[in-house]
Image (cartoon, rainbow over all chains, first blue to last red; front, side, top):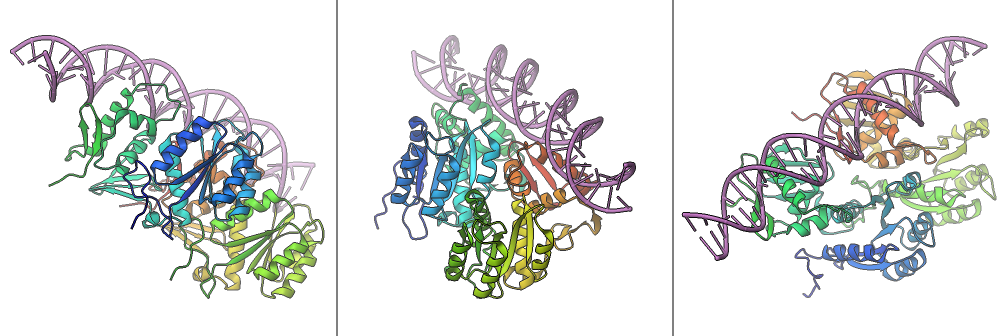
Length: 249
Length: 249
DNA sequence: GCAACCTCTGAGCCCGCTCTCAGCGCGCGG
DNA sequence: CCGCGCGCTGAGAGCGGGCTCAGAGGTTGC
């Protein structure tokens, strides 16, 4: 069996119920942003294509028949509503994740997302986009691997993404938003060393100007809450980064 | 058995007694509104089609043989009541939910709805449409899952949707209309974090221009009535939204 | 026509979260 | 064994999310 594993991932490719990889179309008029997004999604196992405006998005969509679309609301030509309608015309069950500026007309977003669709405000972190997209797919029951539910488990550490709840050994661990996203990244990459730069890229929004120092800080917060008094699961690899490992005994 | 689960909700798909998904036809001449409605209904597990006028509505109906129809009374070509008559010709037991302007001729509506059908006045909230439609289906005994009755239970919190009655620990909790709808949304998504935007989309009418601030306000109202003095069930997840959870002990 | 209620707006406050800075420990290389 | 630098952590400032109160406008019912 020769399933072409997407580059980089280490994770098995996301596949649909028929075994073919999940397809996503990224639509944004900023080519840099589109590139970053498509890179991250490819890394996650998606088959990705991009478009820069509404018209070419539709053309691509007709050809690709994507399972999901990441769609900037502000496009040079069309408006989000029209694109959405056309997309649903091409494929009624397509999942759409909107990208929108924070103070952009939120009222218009309200309503667009009324179905199963979702949105993320700029500036966003890659982890957030990836997680939302996974959420959409899971709820749509499209991906094989995701059908077991929104649970993430490493050792006795369990994360329920929908309830935003984390427990270790059955005990509830309360986390802030950033702590939660950092831990999610670690849990989705167990036993793999992640550099501070990688972490910064995925957990913090792309326009974050600060130093990699915050990563250390948040790792220390996580340790206090997750490892507190217990056998540590978060390990420092000096000069390389951090790893999350289940306790081996 | 491989029934393709329609997108949405993590709720089981709405199915008819023979196991196939419930079918609904949405008829409205405003394509944006039709899109929003069909999105929401698909999310709820319906198989949806749309039409923009009376003639194509009939054509679609003959093909789809829908279990229910969401029907704007004001159509460009025919009037809603003529469509209704024809629909009943296609399928006598079809459920119809009318959409109508507030000051429309209420007496005519009243006459129609005597037959078991229902109506909602514009502007409406999606939760309202969805709930009414569920009510129709339940009364018609068409959906499998709904046969157990209009009761919604989370912990010691119980909602009777038809009687519009809520009790916590046996004590009656009196709620205003908006409070009721907000709580219903929360109760239909227990243990799942809902963002303020999501809540706004579903509980407030689609033309609501205001800020997400109202959601906070109504959450605080709900807390005073539902959580008053008791172990809290409504929880804030900072930067993410709100969750309703049964008290864990 | 009045009273009660409901809904929403705006302002102000509080507090949790995020991040900066600084100092210290400790591992590692010399 | 010493010194440097990476990593850890405590303190604290600033910010912004979220809560509450007060009140205006609208609607319903008497």
